[in-house]
Length: 484
Image (cartoon, rainbow, N blue to C red; front, top):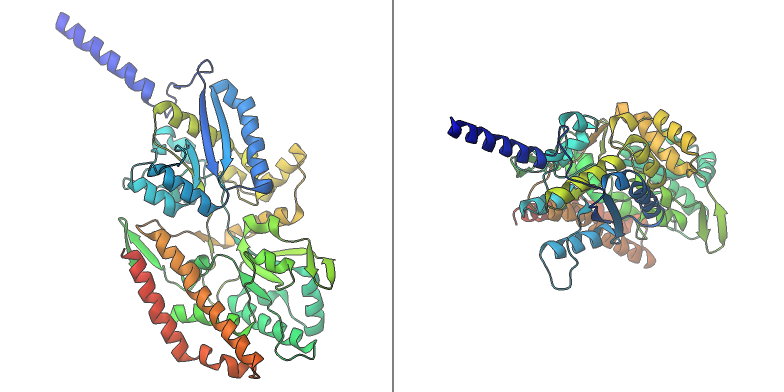
C-alpha cells in the first residue's frame, strides 16, 4: 500500500516537472519579472529599417517585456553577408568572434546549414497549433527545415519582387514613341520595350551606338528560380533533403535570351551596387527588385547636367509570356539559438509580440516588408494601422505594399526548399550569367569604339554557339555546387 502511494507521489512530481518545462498550449511560463532575462538580436537592418526595429524593441521592453521579465537589445551586423559571416564565426568558436546571440536574422539556406550542426532551437515546442495557424501557411512551411518537419525559422517579415519605374522620364519616352505600360507585364515585353528605348535615346544624339538601357534587375538567383517556375520547371527538386537538378535546355535558353542578349546589346544594364543606384544616376528607368528596396528608389535623378525630381510607379514583376504567374517569396526570418528553456521561451515570446498584426504592419510601413500573420495581409489592415497610429509613410513604400496586396490572389508565391550546399548553388545563379554578360558587353563596347556597328560587335555573343557554350558551363557549375 505504502509502495503504491510512493509511486503515485513520484508520478505527480514527474508530471509537475514536465509541466514546468513544457512551453506550449497554455503551460506555465518559466519567466519572472523579478528575475528578468536579457536577449541579444543580430540582424541586417540599417537606416530607417533599423530605426523601426529599434523603436519596436524599445516599446516591447517598456510594455510586454517588462511584464514578462524580458529585455531585448538589437545589433545590426551590417549587410546580410556580414551577418552570415559573424554567425558562422560565433558558431565555430573562432578566435575573436562574439558569443552567439539569442536570436538572429537568417535566410533558409543559412539556417539549414546551422540546423545541421545542431545550433538552432526547436520553435515548434513553444507554439501551439492555434498559434501557428495565425501565420501565413507558406511562411511557416518555409521555416520547417528540420528533418522531423519542426519549425526552426520564425517568420517576421516577408517580401516579394515588383517592377519600379521612373514614371517621370518614362512618360517622355512614351509620348515620343507610343510605348505602353502594358508591355512591361511580360519579360519579353520588357525586352522589346528596352530595345525601343535604346534606339530612341540613341537617336537623340549624333553619336552612334550611345543608346541607354531601360531596365535592370537585382537578385539574379530569383530570375532563374522564379523564371523556371513560370516556365513549368522546378529547378531544385528536393525530397528528404536530397536535391535533383532540373535544367532543361529550352527553358534556360529563354532565360538566356531575355537577360544575356539584352545586356550584351545595351538594352538592359547593371552599373552600381544596386539597380536603384542606376535609376538615381539616370542609367536606367526601371528595375525588378525586392519590395524592401522601395525605400531606396530615388526621388530625383542626378546627372552631370543637373538634377530633376521623379515620381515612382510600382508595377507587378513581369512574367514570361505564356508562363504561370509565380513570384518570389523571400525575406529572412528569425532563428533562436539553442540554449536553455528560459532564453528560448523568452525569444519566442518576443517574436510573437513583434509579429502581432499592428506591430508587424508598423514595421512594414517603414521597411517595405509584408506582415506574416493572416489577419494583417491586406490593404485595409495596413490603412487602418496607418490611420490609428498616425504614421508618416513614404508613398512609394505604401504603393509597393498595396500593389502586391492587390495582386496577391493572382500570384503564387514560391521559395525553393533547403538542401545541402543551397547557398553555394545560389551563388552560381547569382553570378554565372550576370558576370559573363557584363564581360561580353564590355567587349562589345570596345569593338564599337573601334568602329564596328552594334550588330557586328555583338554577332558572336548572341549566336547559337555562344548559348551552347554558356549552357554547358552553367550546368557543370551548378552540378559541381550541389555535389560538394
